[in-house]
Figure 1 (cartoon, rainbow, N blue to C red):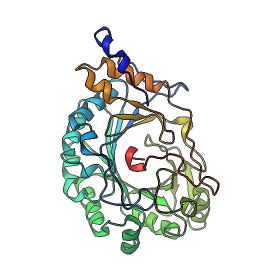
Figure 2 (cartoon, rainbow, N blue to C red):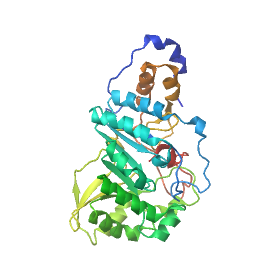
Figure 3 (cartoon, rainbow, N blue to C red):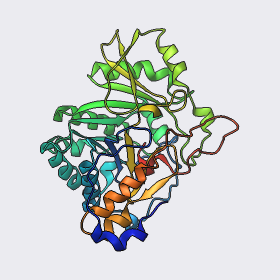
Figure 4 (spheres, helix red, strand yellow):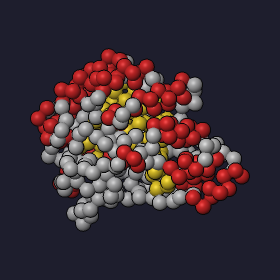
Length: 349
C-alpha cells in the first residue's frame, strides 16, 4: 500500500491541486464509492462468512474526516458519490455525512448522492434521506420468498425490507433493486422479481457473483453466467438493448412486456472495465483504484498530516496514476480461492 509519509515535511511548499483525475488510459474519474462501514446486519452467503471479524472502531475515519475526503474528491472532479458498506445505515450518526454531502448537491458541486442498502434500516431513514437530497437508491434483494430470504441473508427479516421499500417510495425515493444471480437458488425467480420490480415502478439489475473474500460456500457452485440467464429470460420476455446509463457498470435492456428496464452487471462474462470512471474509498481512508485488484493508496496519512488538502490532493493524484486497465476476476474449478482476499463489505461492491 502506498504512503506519502516521506513528503509530509514539504507540505508547506505544496498547493492543493484541484485538477481533474485522468487515469493512465485516459478515463476521467468522476464517480466515488464510499464504504462508510464494513459492518452489516445481514450475513449474505455469497458476500461474507457468518462469523465475521470486522474492523475495530478505532481504525475507522470519523464522519467528519470522510466528509473532508469526499470534498477533496469533489474538488478534483467527482460528480457522483454512492455511499455503501457493509450496510451504510448501520453506521452511527451516518445521516450527518448524508446531510453534509447533500449540501454539495444543493450547491451544484455534486450532481448526485446515492446509497446502496439492504433495506433493513430504510423505514426509519427514508424521509430524512430524501430531505438531504438523495433521490435514488439501490436496494439489494435476491428473492421474494421470505424463507429463502432468511436463508440467503442468514439474519435478514424480509418484512422489514418490504416496509423499507414502501417507506422509501412513499418518501419519493426512486429505487433500483439489485439481485445477485445464484445458480440453483434464485435463477428461476428472476422473472417474478422482474415483474414485481416493474410493477412497482422500480428498475431491476442482476449481478454475477464475484470472487471476493473467503465465504462458507463454493462460488463455483453459485456462479451463473448472465448470458445464460438472459437467454432464459428471452424465452418469455422481449429484451431490447438500450443506451441508458446511470454512471455505473450495468448494461440495460427494455422489457417490452413490462415497460421497465433490466440491467446486467457482468464482471465475469463481459467485464465493464473499458469505461470505468470509478474509485472506491473505505472507512479507513484506503483508496482502491479497482474493485478487482489489491493495489491501494493510504489517504488517511495525508488527511491527518495537515489541515489543508495539498498533501491529500497529491496522494490522490499519485493513486490515480496506478489505476489499472481492468480487474482479475476468475471463477472456475482451478481457481477456488478468491481473486481478491478482502470481502465485498470492505469496499461496497
